[in-house]
Length: 334
Image (cartoon, rainbow, N blue to C red):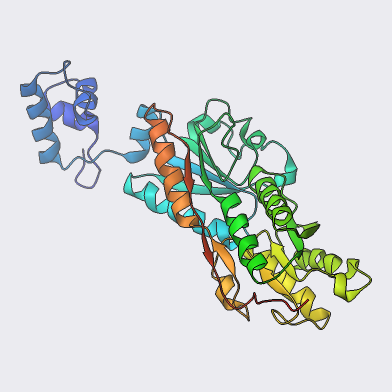
């Protein structure tokens, strides 16, 4: 070993007078019952004298683990998924893991792995707001689904989105609204199907009517969808008095559609969102929405994945939402 080179496990073995495999057992913490305590002390002292530090990459290869998790999301444009990543990365860092993000559009079918050999490149997958079929090609890789069907093959961490929709309808119905429009996301996944079903049931229970138009999770497409709802009734007195949007980004599109038609929010039209991302308070008027703890979803998903990686299937979890009433809703006179 030269004065500038980094000491290796072979150097430690030579210093301690033992085999390199013995050094690997001791420094890898797998010596119990296989190496005597005296030899362990000798190896540890030799490593300390040489200033030996394990090479993380080499250690990963020996242990068959990359200490990397992949977070799959349907889009990178929605702020919600940035918060999911922040929570997952924060929890992963506490355990010495890294997180890579891989966007996979909902309508693209099963995902092709970005890695030649996924089981050697990543330890596990968090798949957020996507169907199970997306991860079906990652055979053998541990998976936890976020905001996904709790009756499926994989462990899940979900939001109480149905309760959130019911809370929005109760709020709007309490303001006198009975004609509802649903600005829906064209994402064919459990969470959005659940939102629609809960919304439809709650509106029917309130004695209201519900029209629906769909678009991508995008302001422009949401504007077009909201516009179709507002233009569908030939009589302005028959158009929806409240638009319920699948997320806050789509609510921004609904605002634009309303203003393009000379309608004021909320004087002429109440609008609600879902998620409570930063955009909700940047809009004018500020948006009534359901706060879904996106960072906690990512963190709890990572905890569940760590449990799965340790050999135990985690119990399904549901995180409650919270209705946040702001200035985009008001009582209707129609």
